[in-house]
Image (cartoon, helix red, strand yellow):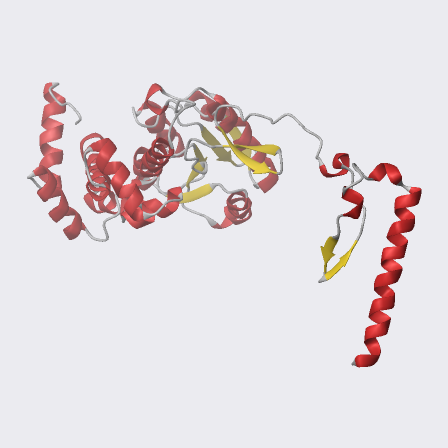
Length: 347
């Protein structure tokens, strides 16, 4: 160990000597005469070294980019990266296929789901009931159904208050005389010939959904103001999630997870903004959907129970009686009588 000390001292002398040579050849690097004699401490050794010029240490000043309203700012160094906030809960487009034979549509359904469409099937009268209950963005109607006449189904969809605005695409066999003409006569927006080519069907659906996607939102779904707080955005997204599919929301924790927050925070927001607990709000929305379907559709009670998220008719009946004071069947009969008398008002 002692034999290395002279070498270390020699190395230190060489460094000091090199620094002296640098001071002689680069005198302008020293801001003043006192600074050149000030030792620097590196790795426990004192030696002289010229400091960097101040201009080398100062970053160039760039103006900060202010985020526009509706954006959040993330700072990297002295640069602001704007990240657009989506103030609304966006649900996938829902395509309801009314047919009694799902097999030929397997490839098209796989492609639609791969493109993040929500696809559901129904047949016969259940197709009409599902359209009333779900309000899908698009209905694909099989023109070759055996259980129900497709053209009568199209007339029902176009005449019902709940479904008249839903675009309908007919799936028809080629060579059937007058099929496409009658389909357009009963309100279809397009006809697709069988066999179905998935890419063509996707393109046609996208074309007919585009006007609805670009249409201005209703007044009840007006966008939030630019100065909306985080609580306002969370509440709006939670309300949109409930409205999109009330039957799939069972717990406050599930709703909080769907909008990206935690259960306690969402419960506090609901209590302060709506005066109800989140659990009570979800339950009331389920009952409101059930009342609408009981009064305005012929959907069976067991199907309504499943639609609003109850596993059995018994559970649904108990919950509905606790909410309305009467059974679902009694409510339906009273609503029908009030409609005939013209005194029915939907709560």
